[in-house]
Amino acid sequence: MSFWTAIFLICCLVAATQMYKAHQRREGGIVVDERGNEREIVQENQSLNREVAELRERIKVLERIATDANTGSAKRLSDDIEKLRDDRD
Image (cartoon, rainbow, N blue to C red):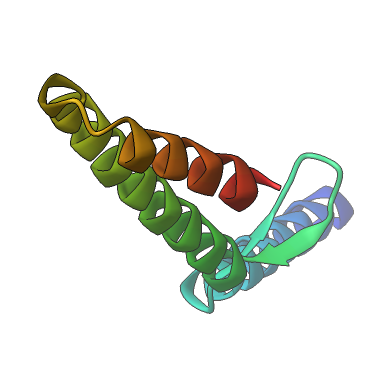
């Protein structure tokens, strides 16, 4: 076996090992960004799910405000607006 063949095989082995490690990290819920920072997908998914739940609640309140505006319940409308402002802070 020539010297260059051995170097080529070593490079292939290193590349395959790196690809295997990256696959294992993805399977374990860890992603690596372009800067090499690792982060867990699970934490990101939990925060996104929490944000979606909060937004759905706000939509429900806004829908109720829009439908109740025709009935003339100004006090309830005012309370709902204040609740939205408090939730945002």
